[in-house]
Image 1 (cartoon, rainbow, N blue to C red):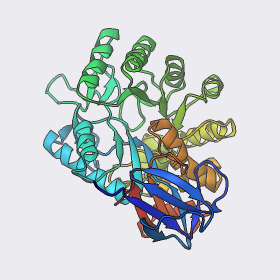
Image 2: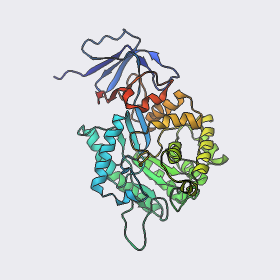
Image 3: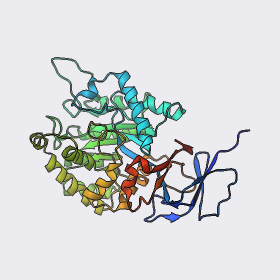
Image 4: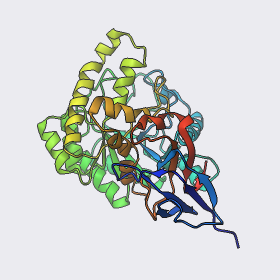
Length: 407
């Protein structure tokens, strides 16, 4: 009979994810669960592996809520479409390892380039054959003809990194197909995006009946629905129809803000302000291109929207479209500081968005330090409740644990 695996973190501090402050406590892990939390010296576990946590803080593992693990460090608009499926699998596999190395124990997919790309990597992670975070595998984006990611051209064929759907039955069939092939998440493109010639971010491309049937079909099958929605109307359609996570929401009007607030007990928002920061400060793009993409105008709208939503108590998640050349996967934790700098979050609020809120959005029992929770935790040098950007430096991650296993 094999011995139960136990690990005791002792001598350090604990931040639960819920609380506003950390406290001096020890934590006992048994198999894949947290089984005891108590003040120093009160947990007896002679048979446990002991880890000295002095000078450090135990926090929940980070959760990326807008995961693009399959992005091939994208350098031009159709590079995802041009990447063969075999390479896409390898890119996703390597990104998964990189994310776990960066302290991310959970990722919610936000559009797989091919239907099974994320699902097969998730299966390999869950089998223990490759390292990676808990991955909620996504469908390719479901988009209307002419919508975001429909990069088809009449004069030549291209295998677009999306499923193009028009009408209720095409939407329903696409989701059922995704369910059959093993996805956890349905990704909808309800609006356009200012980073492509058309449709731009203020254009709403997916009809309300299409969004509604997507949410109804996904709910029947136990799948979550996440949505790219920049325009005010696309956000309203997402809220009215029951989307679980809304990405971007840049151009909300007062009605959209009120609708999000009314649904805040079931809804999560990813501001993705990190993308705008990256475009302005990391991309090296010429000013003329930034102006053509209306980056500064859109960033101002994004900051206004999400500062207001923060004041209204809406639950936010980190996830800033990482996976592009100037913002590669593994640097995602920089979003925590962006929430502080641009949206007015306190350090603890920003850290909570990256941990506890993400755990609630995933619904798998992670994202907090409590008895009975999954042992997805980080031991971070120093006090990340005061300096949350500590977690963005891998040198400060003394222990990365997922499911009770030290990576």
